[in-house]
Length: 639
Image 1: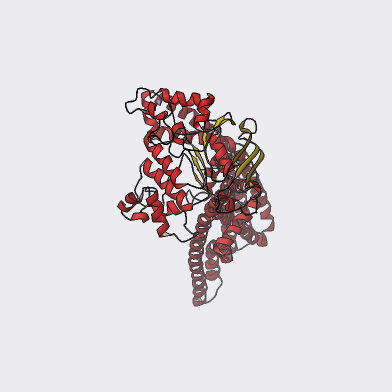
Image 2: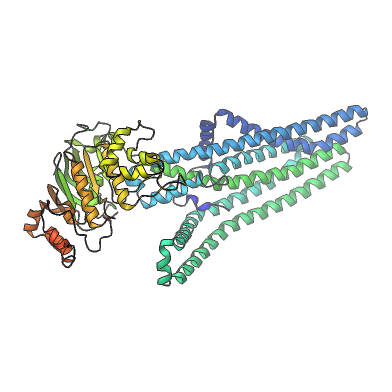
């Protein structure tokens, strides 16, 4: 099946020659220059072997009619047959070796895609369009061996084999009957023109095909997702899904009909050209044979060349057509490669590494779409070692602010300073060493526990004593000790089928252990306990408070009572800090913070465990908090 949707979102266009050159560079880099030599040998032998097979009847007839001694004729025929078999063996070896090199190029070429994605700016990589492009670019490397880079290389050398075969056969014909090349060349040109028009029509509907295929994939994922099964059945949405499927499939069929119809017409043209070519050629050869202009061995040779010429022509143009389709996957990867080029980054080291930092925002604004501001003209100073709480309703800008503070985002306007140094001038690697961040959507990777905590794979040796201490501080040591392989136990079954799963609370403690192990002087917690119940959240925040002593810390929580231990609370509304102060000061002010706090408290007035009463206690009161009504565990922040 043609995969013309693969480059549907690509904004750039790359020429065939440019993409072919890239493929050859990839193969030479990954497999070595000898890989190109082996593929060239495969092309040459791929033409020589059928050429000799086509010429063998002529050789046999010439040997039998030459009047030579029988043993001499037999030796000639046996030699030709032996050479033919040797070429068959060489072709088998060269073909197998070439296919292996094509596979290696595909697999290791995919490493470039992974490297690009990891190096890209975070602001780009989190976007929906980037997700689509990356998903399509993976088809160039990771789907199977019949798609993308591997198939493109195979088709490239198949097209070269067909072209070389056409040339070799045409030269053989031209030496004996020069004028016969005229209909061969003209009919070949007609086939080329038809094939080119088909490619142009296919390319014209490529973007629409991609959109239709993406819509189908979306519907398929949603219909088969177990999480959606309840709503689909309870709200009788099955009929809607069937209707949507039918509409998308119909659109896909119409678009594919345009493309397939163009190629079908091109095939009809090629078949008609082959019929005329063979009819004219055989008629001419028979006439020349009866006229005595050529003998029987020459007739057999030329007849074989004419028939083979058509086969080579078909091979060349079929391979070229498929090569054009497969190169669309390569073009999509190249588009991603260009998009993933990181913007200009600073090179300066982070100031005062390892010490609690001051972070200043000077008239900072940030916009996701270039129109509405998620943060607006924000001026703020967080003192070294200070504990700050960011609170506000969903979409107030809390998560956006955290991403600006740690350098994942750059301001649309204004400047963020770290100890008086513009963050934009600091090398990101140096900058990120100073931050431990736990986001609300945190999760463990399918690595072992030690790797999840230390994040040290390939960079430095794991400090076993420090790992054990951090697990103990996070109240996770007993759990880890109970796992089948201790800290070497894998989490999840993606990598190890025997991997284990952690509960929500255990995952939160794992994130705490990770932050402790890194030991960065700035700790940013973006609603990391959103999935926990109020009591567990309060306990987790107190644990963070205790273990981050002396570090610059920023906490986000929807449950306002959880962060009352902070030295300063910032209340955000509409991307602005509208109130700041201690809990008591903000309650006394009677503003948005106080109203939000009282709204949360109102829903627990009749709670038997007395959350309403506990909310009125000071920071040293009982370790219980109350949740916000309708809390969904996330901060949209216009993202």
